[in-house]
Length: 209
Image 1 (cartoon, rainbow, N blue to C red):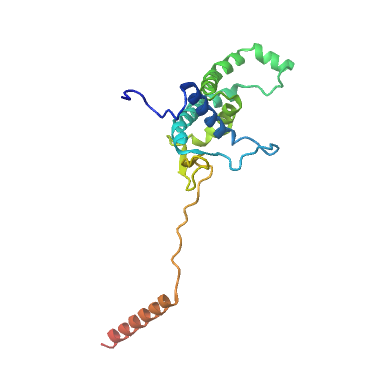
Image 2 (image 1 turned 45 degrees about the horizontal axis):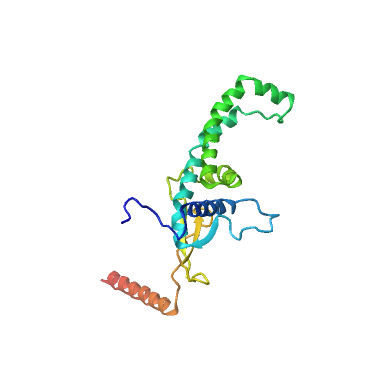
């Protein structure tokens, strides 16, 4: 019986499965990095291709990380107002470091630091956590959830014919839903002319009466 045993094993030990899900979550966030000078640049930002079952398993982890980062945006904005523009290590920065303003900044910044440490603990990648907090989280301020989507691919994976799927961030590669206009044919134009002629003749007869 599988009482209280939630999730898929994916044919791996618990430690292997946990490491694999961490890597998948980090890989999705790292596709948003600045890869202009990177030889291993992602083909599409905000999208990874994996198996359907792996995508379904890693999706809750990704959404949890985004929610944690999103909740720290007000604290980050409050700390930004108390920060100094002086260069680190300069005399002005040292004076600010010894003042009460630094203590206020540190208190305002504390929730952000705690959240970053929590996300690093969940995905195990500092660079991915930085990208999440700096660029990804602010997109979903007004979105209550559902930050990712899964799209199945028609072609299976070579070797074991596993069902493949695309896991991507919502709002990055969305398609514009444009309603196609109905094409006009010659028969339709002739029918419109007949309707107009009939309507004109009917109005003339009504006027004669």
